Image (cartoon, rainbow, N blue to C red; front, side, top):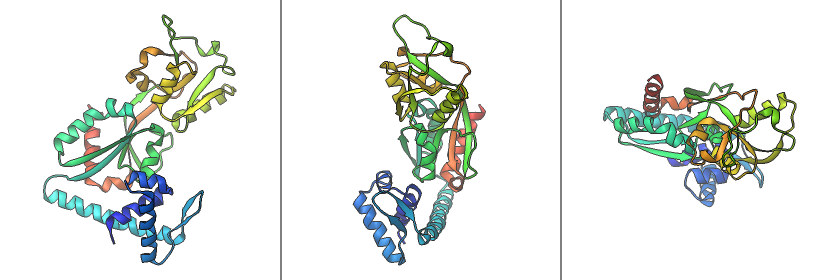
Length: 295
């Protein structure tokens, strides 16, 4: 059976979204649909139940996913063995992270990795940091740079790299300082720009709940960089990791507010699915990341 077909099936089994899989795997939705239909004909069973609103795996689909996982792991192990025989790693490794992580955390790790393994092709995707762990779950990336969750799933392996405070930010009027503390802010009236999803949203909602405040939400936004842009335009107060503020080209247009109590800081690190640690390219990247963390 075609390995490419198994990879398409496996991604769709994780994403349960034809559009998302077609974009991630660089095929048209119609080509993906035809591939799955041919696969179902070959297997002799429906692998997915799909309607206008949802996609789910059938019982046969669940069993076929186990088979696909087994075959793809064997294929990867074969490539790893051949790479070791040739004394050089080859192939692709996919990494997902935010724009900030791409130019603040990754450069030293990737610089070393490229120097040691020049034959490995790096596929770097950037986007909303809150989607990083989903990218691993869906098989859209081998590795991600992400905020480490409080309760880490057993199926994930994580390596902490840095810690950064989670801070409230406001637009900085010309000539003014950091702005008022939390006691001077009318949270019922002040517009708040919050993350659409992810750990920063969870911690912000917990902070407001503990203060028994229902915030005046101006917008839920995907991506910390977008939150900073909206704050700099005067749309409201935002909540982002301080690292993103420090690396932002708009940092002179915003101010960090001295809000108390402080939000729980972010631990940021490299994450991968535990099964990906069988991949020699992931192992090599991980070893270099550990070296960087230990220095």
